[in-house]
Length: 326
Image (cartoon, rainbow, N blue to C red; front, side, top):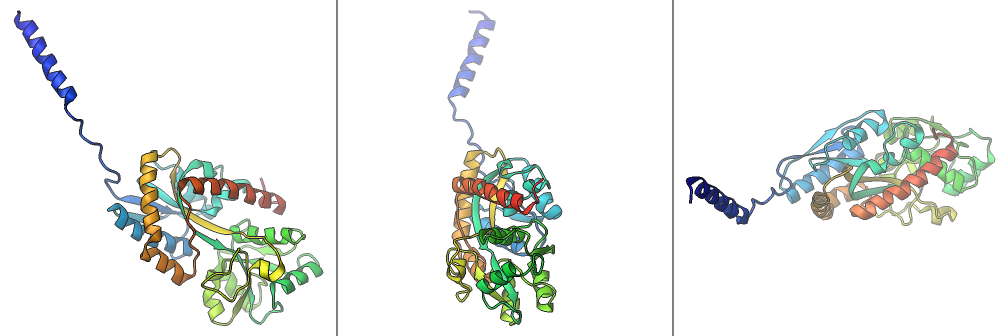
């Protein structure tokens, strides 16, 4: 046997031995801190929800979850940042119902299909808030007056043009057989400034979530006539549902959930879904949401994806009927 042949056999033997050795295990996710992008400003309800779920999520994942606010464009900037991130599980976002509205209005081409759903963690139903000393003593009285008076007699505010509370109220008017624009919409930076304007007498109706009016309601300046929900809110037990108030089954509101860019590894999604569910069930999250009066509603990855698709079609129809579709 030649030296060359012996060397070859020796090398092949080493190779064979290497092939039967166990391969090093892949690193467990997550190995490093995670960024959670929030498309809305610091200090608001979405930001507070994000920071609370992030705190609870850190305990489940054993990694820091850094909340980063990316504001602008009525939610377009932040939602775009989430969609364009590397789909490795290290950049996630607290997505909101605006992704079911923005593309219908020509603000972006992004849709729910550009994200990997992980879990829905919140849903806040729209309410009907009016000034405590105003002319409306019930939801039925308000709607009767809106129907009886000329178009544009009353106005409403609480978000930008085409925002969730605008579309929610327009949908209610449609549900009651009226034109979607029978009440003039006054764009605002949110429910809080709209409530202030309403208390001052320049706004008639603020159809935001009831918790957003908590401070003004407790101060006796604002009252909530009804909630567009299937059941009364535990935090506002005296506010009737639309079903109780006017006999309507119409329900609508704003949702928030955790999602990542399209194309994430299913194994990573499963890990995150399990961790988010534990964080959602934690005292940290549940106690905060209850204290603020925010709604808690859970959907896992598959159900969340289906829910987003359903909501997209629903809001698309409202956007078209309101005349904002582009």
